[in-house]
Length: 221
Image 1: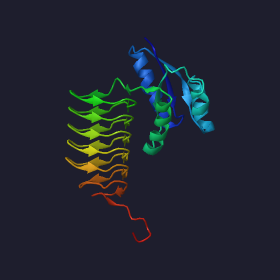
Image 2 (image 1 turned 120 degrees about the vertical axis):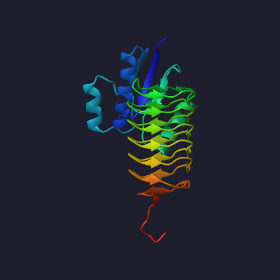
Image 3 (image 1 turned 135 degrees about the vertical axis):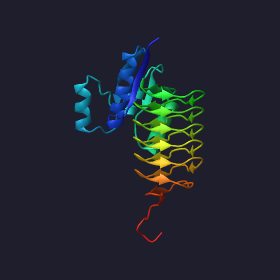
Image 4 (image 1 turned 180 degrees about the vertical axis):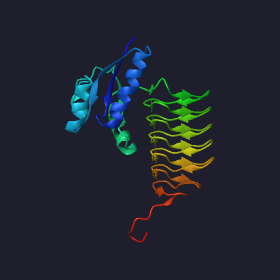
């Protein structure tokens, strides 16, 4: 049975998600891309969709009003908080999220992968890893053994999550960042690009640098 999928997000990650789907189709998967939804697409993004022959379907609200209920959706929006809100709207409408994994990704044994997950090219996921719903793993990211990434986590290109790390809901790991063995990154936290996390990161904070420290807000706090 062919899986009919809409991609939410016309930006860069949305088009990277389309690349994942196209690679899966080329490998024999039975997927039909219905098109892309976006509440406020840029002209440049719409032009890129036109060049690759992918229909722009309008806003989420417009499309959901006519959905039949058998479609699957992928929220290809990089910001975890926005992704959570969008996914809730689709879930409330009775639709189920699709998970897509690029054929070049390596997935270790005994891994558990939730709904709405996007795993792009060159990703390495080790053994006994848990990925919650709507997790994004960007190109060339590495997830170590026994790591747990909760719902709506984003791991940007080239980031490394070491073994036994706990990355909690809605956290974002910047490009090239490293989280060392056995640590926790709190819910909604942001790890800056190229930062090296050497101790637990508190929820809602932003850490940068090597070793990673809480970012100075400039207001004395």
